[in-house]
Length: 204
Image 1 (tube, one colour):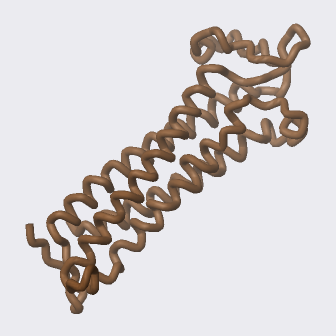
Image 2: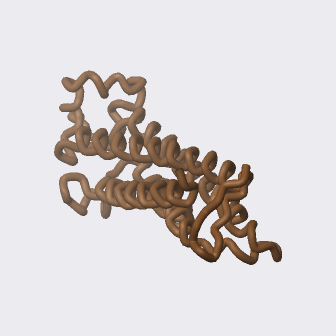
Image 3: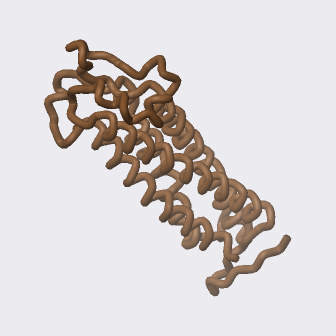
């Protein structure tokens, strides 16, 4: 399989995942579509870590665009050698993919912490706080305890759903970035070369 085409496929998938992560993170700021809780700072602290916006979002755009552009990368002229340009580009994509791994890993960790701690909400005792902080995330399987949160309405479902989505998206993105690291190393070391006729040869 063409290394460049594989990278391009990975790039488009990363782009989709990055956009979805940004949207999921933005939704966390507006429980049930309401803006007042963000204005009053009545949101989970992990919402403000920008894990989906920065980690699995903006940082993930770097490997996405690098991978998308690899197939059309000019292979001639790298270090003065006509045949090694594509190899240099493939090896360069490894660095971009590692940036994606770092961004995805950050989102994965913060999302897991957000799920474990639970939402910040108005409790049945009239106080704002984290009613599930010391439950070791057992609240996730015990839906009967979710009624402890009075406001925002359905905030437990909102947080669990969106943090779980971010967890899944970042996990998939990390896997894709690791695939591109392997793809880039093999493509670079093997010396995938595009000739002026736009054909490719693989000289391993």
